[in-house]
Length: 229
Image (cartoon, rainbow, N blue to C red; front, side, top):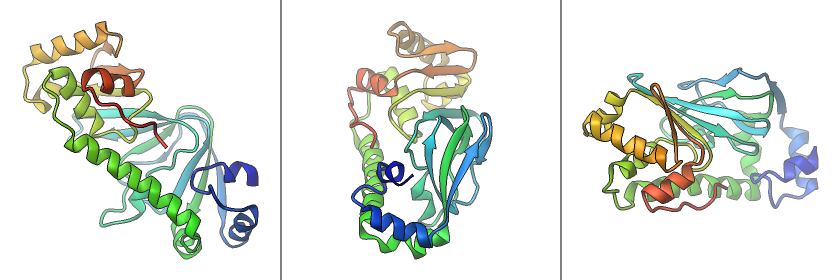
């Protein structure tokens, strides 16, 4: 178990002795999540530090008016919105559903504050990861706006994603996407079909599936993001 935990980016640089001291004081919950189980709901209070240890999980964001839904696939070692533990709003921004039988590590927020934050290495690792996320989103926000409709579709999704790599699924009506981008339905349809012909996405009724979001960003917006950490 020690070796597995020390491989996680949040514990890198810690010694086995330091981790042992933490385990003596802090309750680590190792929880099994069944396929299809929702273990965090959008809007829930973020009262735990959660890391995906094994399996795959869907992160699902639903817009405030319910007009669209963005679903992403997360893989092991991903922390579930650690930034939502801090600041003025401490609620999860997405729901999290197990794609397959999965295992997560959960640490209660009160132990997180009272014990974990006393270890400089862990605090620095966490700050680096949260800062990386913030800088990545800032780069997306301030990068030159794409001129093409295809690029604007990529930007629309990028601003709402938890990660900028991996597979994504956007569930939305053509009319809603057109309204979001202030475009005509015909222009949106033409752009989506153009991206499908390039092999960047697959279209079905009310659904856009993207196998590699990083590839879509680089080809339609000429923006290449660093790999997710």
